[in-house]
Image (cartoon, rainbow over all chains, first blue to last red; front, top):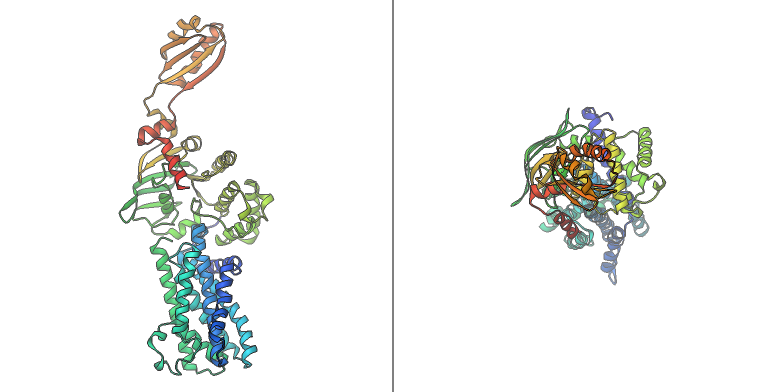
Length: 253
Length: 321
C-alpha cells in the first residue's frame, strides 16, 4: 500500500474523513440503543411533564426550554453510552490501533452527538411548532440547535470520560444534568438581561442554549445577545472537548 | 537483514510499578518473533508501547522505520494488531467491520472489496460475511480480528496472546494461519504464555519476566543451554543384550543400560547418534521396533532461566479469567 507523506490539505481531508467515519459508525450503532433513547428522547419529556402537571404554562417560556432540554439530554446521552461501552468492550483500542488520535476519536464522537442533537431538534421543533403556533426563523433555529448540540455533546463526552461502563457513567451524568436544568432556568424566565442572571446560571452552558432557543422559537432575536449565546456555547464546547482529550490521555484511555 | 523493529531501553512506569524495565531487542524483517512470559511480565505493555497505544516513560523504539515516541500516528499506518484488550463491533456484520477498518486506513473503494474478499477467503469467513460479529464463535472472532489487522497490508503484525481462550482445534487452525502469514513475508511479533506455541512457531524468542528481558535466542539454542541428560530409548526384535557390544562401541554413546529387548543410550547430542545407531543395528541384522528420544524442551530452558514453574503462567491466566 502506498503510504507516502501527504500534503497539509490532503492530511486535513484525511483527518476529517476519519472523524466522519467514527461519527457515522457511532450513529449506526448507538442512536437506537435503549439507554440513549430512554435518557435522550424520553427523559426530557418526563421532566417537562413533572414540571407542567397542574401548573399554568407559558408556552413562550416552557416550549423553548423543552427543546433545549431535549438537545441537552439527547446530544449528551449517546456519549454516556458509546464512550464507556467502547472502553469496556475494547473496540476503542481497535480504533486507536488504526491511524486515529485521541483528538480525532473525541471529535468523531462529538459529531455523532451533534447529529443526534439535530435530529432531536427537528422532532421537538415540530412539536414546538404545533404547540406554540408561531413560526420560528429557520436559520436562527438551525444555528441555535447546531451550537447547542455541539456544546451539549462535548459536555456529555466530558461527563463520560472518567468511566469504563454505561451503568457507571449514566447515573452521575443524569443527576448533574437535572441539577443544571434548574440552575439554567429552563422552564422560567431568569431575567431579560445577562446582568440580571444569577451567577450560577452564567456558569451553566444550558443557560445559553435555553436563551438562544427562546429567541429562535419566539421570533424575538436580539442579535448581540444571540451571538453572545452562540459564542458561549462554542467556547464551553471547546473547553469540554479539550478536557475530554486530557482526561482520556491522562488515564491512558 | 533490515530490522523491522528496534527497541532500546524501553521503560513504562505506572506510579510505583515498573511494568517494563529497560527492554531492548530487534526483530528482523520477515521474522516470526516471540515474547514469552507469565501473566503480568510486561508483554502486553510492551506491545501497547510499540503500537502507539501507550506512551513509553523512557527509551526508544523504531517500528517499520517510524519512531514510536515521536511519530506514533505514523507507526499505526504500518502495523496491524490483534490484542487481548481490543475487539470489533458486535452490532455490525463481518463485512461492515472490515470495511470500516479499511476506510479508516484510507483504502480505496475498488481495492477495498477485493482485499476484504481475499482476507475472508484466507481466514475461512467468507460464508459468514453478513453475520453480525456478536454471533461468531471465539475462534472466528480471533480470525476476524487478524483479518482486520491485515486489511491495510501492514509491514508488521503484532499478535497479543492470539490463542488464549480458544478450543484446541481453533488454536491449531490459528497457528497454521500464523505460519501461512509468516511464509508470505509478514513480520510477526507474537506474545504468548504457551511455551509449546513459542517453540513451535517462533524463529527467535525473548523470555520476559517482571518487566525485564531474561534472554533472547532461537528455541534450539535456548534448549541447548539447559544442562540435562539426553538419551535415546530403543527397542529391538530380540534381546538387547545381543547388541550390547555394538552399542557400546559407538563413539557418541557415553553409557548404555540394557533392559530386556530395550536399551537406553546416554549421549551428548541426539542429532549425532541417530544415523550411526541405525547403521549399527542394521548391520547386526536386528530390527528396530520403537525409538524415542528425550532432550531438553523450551519449557526446561524457561524454568532454568526464569526460576518459574511453567504451570504458574497458565494458573495466572486462568485466575485472570
